[in-house]
Image 1 (cartoon, rainbow, N blue to C red):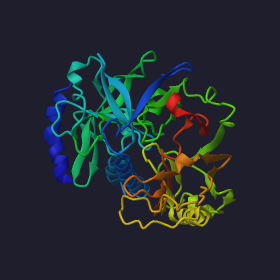
Image 2 (spheres, rainbow, N blue to C red; image 1 turned 180 degrees about the horizontal axis):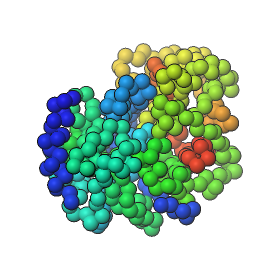
Image 3 (cartoon, helix red, strand yellow; image 1 turned 90 degrees about the vertical axis):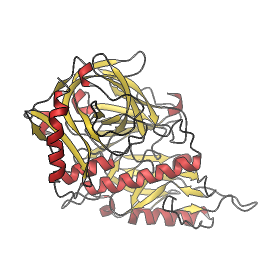
Image 4 (tube, rainbow, N blue to C red; image 1 turned 45 degrees about the horizontal axis):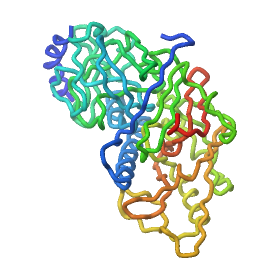
Length: 438
């Protein structure tokens, strides 16, 4: 750790010398592109990559609650920042366009900046603050600097650093800059957004050029813009059709409701004091084939002593991870109701509740309905949101996995739902929607 801090102190003079909201009508729309879109992967490869990313992210998010100190938490946050969808935006004056990974599980907005002492591959040039007239470094006494997990100060300039293992994963200057958001026809420009200008970075940005946090903390885009509502309608990670993001005044479910979609459902967010930035829900039970599983309340509850457990809704995890006792009940119910032999699963990248497919001749198979029950709301999942064909084995699999700790509702399960995050009223609302047509 001491050696890393020493390296930062040596490099900081070079880095620093190189770079001299809202009202009721504010809002924008944006297009979200899946990180694997257009890469030529087969369905089997897409599934394997999604499961691998989800497993890594779930393990990291669950470790956050028990992090011993701020440095450990910062290490874990970087490991967890492996989202699934890219959001287009622009930085600076004049604007320079790039795509960043949208992450509802974190807060910091950051991109890689020139001069880059250590950087990873990205599809666009590194952002050069010397070419932007609106770039301004933040002082160590600024509120945004104090909101960092582990701020550093050098010559009264705020420096952020997120460590992973024994090397700096992303480090640089915290600054204010003008950001531009939206799509053709709805571009909006917002000055003085705090972001990390990273000069030391490692890992992978998955076809993006940075991260944009949509969590509940003060550094997130949601908090900084002061428009506490956003919504998205996600297409499947196997679909080439882009998804949609709506922010501020555009974030409404009023135009989504149809005669076939049913009423809008809403459930309150709950706060986990150990992880206040994340979106926790009060999940009460699960039904399979119309039969409630009677999951014990403690299985979905947040542990008041250490902040572990609970249920998070997360756009950055593809498949849903259920706490082991809940997963076991779901697995047993599907085995009993599907009536097909279980497939032998050997690879860690495979889903574990899989049935041999196709069924024997003249065998009629009916898949049980699956419903997630939350406080005040029921999420009735369409079949394509929880069953899929594993292209590598041909098996029919439940798109869920067991977790050693809490539960995470992944994007595959709420694809083709229009989902509204209302931070002002602390509510999550959702309704079925044809996201490929929005």
